[in-house]
Image (cartoon, rainbow over the protein chains, first blue to last red):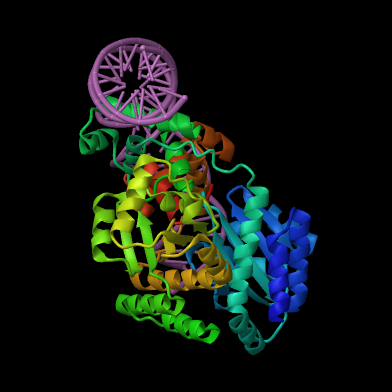
Amino acid sequence: MARKLDDLLNRLACAADLKDLQASIFGLRDAYDVEHLVYHSVKSNGAQWGALTYPPGWVDVYTAQRFQTVDPVVLSCFQGFRPVDWKHLDWSGRVARTVLGEGIAHGLGNQGFSLPIRGPSGQFALFTVNHRAGDDTWGRFTKSHLNDLLLAAHYVNERALALEGVELQPRQALSPRETDALTLLAAGRSRSQIAETLKISEHTLRVYIEGARHKLGALNTTHAVANALARGLICL
Amino acid sequence: MARKLDDLLNRLACAADLKDLQASIFGLRDAYDVEHLVYHSVKSNGAQWGALTYPPGWVDVYTAQRFQTVDPVVLSCFQGFRPVDWKHLDWSGRVARTVLGEGIAHGLGNQGFSLPIRGPSGQFALFTVNHRAGDDTWGRFTKSHLNDLLLAAHYVNERALALEGVELQPRQALSPRETDALTLLAAGRSRSQIAETLKISEHTLRVYIEGARHKLGALNTTHAVANALARGLICL
DNA sequence: TTCATCCTCCCCCGATCCGGTGAGGCAGGT
DNA sequence: ACCTGCCTCACCGGATCGGGGGAGGATGAA
């Protein structure tokens, strides 16, 4: 099994396109002998599915209903670093139970285990194993395969980023002053405060802010800050 | 070796405080038989060092000079997902060579291998192995230990987050409308545009924005957006 | 039921920001 | 030597934001 997994990971690492990736996911699913294996990146405009074994019907419903905005799995992974077992989540909300119920109605297993993965530019994705099993069986499975899953999640995401994210950072770097300006803006300071902090005139400060806006192709200051933050050009 | 590593990772996973973490790092360093092993999180206010085996002198210099803003290792890892070998980086810049030279002068090895790690709320950290070795020896080392290092990096960060980040999300969740508003603001839309998009009056929109500001303790709209983005309450 | 929260709408006005344009000095690379 | 990019300063008018009010209805939790 260990060698088989290595083979699958290697195959994953060489996937030339999304079809390969998808095939690798199916291979992993079979190797683990679980119901479903899912990799998908999460974006504000809606879940952007990557490679998965879910039935298309479920994916359609999930996307159409914007379930990713209320799905406890997504929300919890978003806020944390550790993988989460679905059964440890809070399913008390009405919408949460709806999501779960609909999922099971579409053929999902009752057990799930999801790993958050984060990449550059604020990228966020989930790697999920789904199965039909009892609590103890499932607990043993996730515990014994944790490291495998961590690595698999990492490699899948690496591949997906390489394939999908063709538009690698134009790396229109900001100048030091521009970085300072955006950083302080992100901290909620006003222009006059920032100018004082940086010991420059407010007029000068505005030149930096506008420079940053143009470099980032931002529509306004807030956009520029959000962009810089997401691209990792500044941090809080 | 494999079992020894497992033991070390387990010990890591149980570290009760920073001292334990630091001790684990030293253990790993010895297990790998490399010069230095470093875990540190990167923040805008300066590098916040975690657990490391670097000589204190080098850390002081690095921090005082704000090297993390020009260090090619940090910049490259920040923009990418894959681990990077130092020798594949661009050291042509003047400041870059300064950083490298100073580091070696302080006792660092000539070879380095750094893995980016990302956590919630825009957290970013580096896990670095440093050694004195020839290119081929080093290449074999990094290649054969890649998976180990990925896992080690993950566990160290998990532990560091658990220890240091005591202030777990107050999870002052935003209402759906507030989320919508901030998301569109982050996309650079103006209030009037957003109101039109959401099909509500601009007055109503302002109520949401102000509500979000207050919940997030933000000083202004830009601050609120930056906050929400960093906390993972919205994404681009 | 009652309370809390959310969604929706409306008023006003001062403070702040935006966008365009201009210009001079100083460093770095070709 | 030249050009490019960065840092610094300046003006102006219109658009936008910020903060302070108040009000009604729907929904879900205790």
